[in-house]
Amino acid sequence: MDLIRRTLTSLGAFTARPAAFLIVIAYGTAWLFLQPSSFDMHAIATLMVWIMTLVIQRAEHRDTQALHAKLDELVHAQSKARNDLTKIDDEEPEDIEERRQLERHND
Image 1 (cartoon, rainbow, N blue to C red):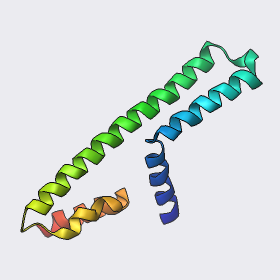
Image 2 (tube, rainbow, N blue to C red):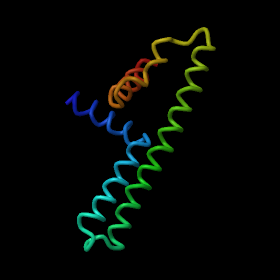
Image 3 (tube, one colour):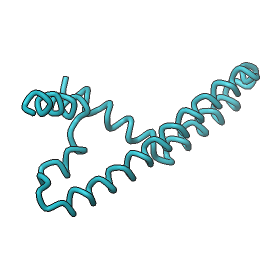
């Protein structure tokens, strides 16, 4: 289960990279040359949906990275802050949520 979560997280991070766009473009080009008879408006719409999904994923990834950088700076500036939280973004989302739940119950 842990391997699946890490794989999905890595896949999500990969789709935020420019290489993912190249893969979709290569797929569309291959589709156009290998099956030109099926490359119609539906095919173009499908490729556009994939590209827009990647654009949204990239924008969200950028926003998340910027937010993490700002929060890291605030944590480092605050002398009473716990340093173990600065690397929490390296954990899996489920682990972070579990940690947040435990901290809510401890407060």
